[in-house]
Length: 241
Length: 245
Image (tube, rainbow over all chains, first blue to last red):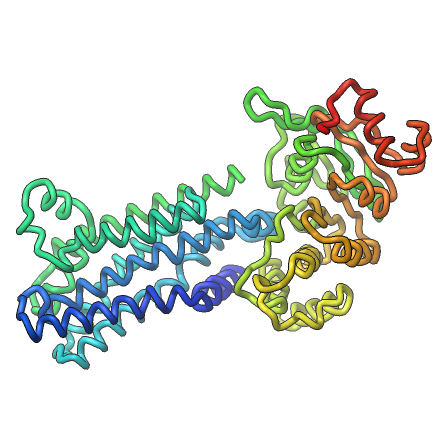
């Protein structure tokens, strides 16, 4: 009951922020439209909808980190969290209350990307639905990362780290905009060691109707690690406050 | 039963002693002001009393419950309005109040009734549907106090309740605080006139220690002055501490 109260508040705070609509939905959809238009004039296999849509979907989810981190950092800087620490809310109420409302937002955001791609010509099959649902581990990974960053950093730092650095890292290291094998070397090894590329490749493989167990394992592993780290850091932050 | 009974409360951060052995009793229903310059230890004391930080030594009983051994029980008895306004910026005033009621586990009907009561009591009617983040500082402070009162606390902690407000907004908020009935109020402030105007008794803190606690009139008489500000300076200097001026 208390957790649901907290979840409703999280959802309202995020959805009423115009940045959510602008960056969370508008920006990825504009990218999808622009790159599809380029693809029509200068065909590049990477920008074919089957390849591009998973990249845009995962890139769009990176903004979930910004939304979660900004909300938590602001709650800290305004002492709102301090006020709540004097109420009967428990650590799990906070962690779930911050996390759960963002999960449907992430999946809806991803679904809308695929819906826009369908309008542009992406065939809709059962594989498409599987690809959307396969975004769940990355969705939770990005939200947990937001919980962690929001607990550790100030709202100003969060803007730079999660708004600029993380979205750029996701863009470069996910293989969404260029093939990491073309760069090769340490860049490719780094991309393969991080979850972003696997998150995109997972959805691409599912769209092709192929097995993607390896990519799924990577994303699930990162998701679990991020959740455990975020919960531990948040709980520690509560005690410290 | 006393509203607050503080016994040898100490808080150290490494080598720095923020609160050095605080002893104080506040009877139920009293409005008590902790007065001191920045860094006197007022906010740290309030944070220990509201179970936000654990004392290094000593204890405090809030309506008979120990902040060290029974923090959950204490949390059920208190309301806190922090130094910052601490409101949910994108929620309306009504939603902020309903949200606080929800965090205390109130049912929907009870939460709505309590919201209505506080709206009337604190005069929030005209801003009830406005988002908290778009209110003036004075309204945000008023909302902050209303949020602290949602759970019907027996002890209310107000940390610098009028910090940064203009004269009119401060006067309006003083009226709100004076109107609080049946609740023990412990407020911190560094405004002399605020402590004198609002509190039944005033405690002067400096260097983490409580130098004295009495009515404003008695403190002025003790210092041999008619001005409360002069009395404050005299008390701090008498203790051999810097008044921070």
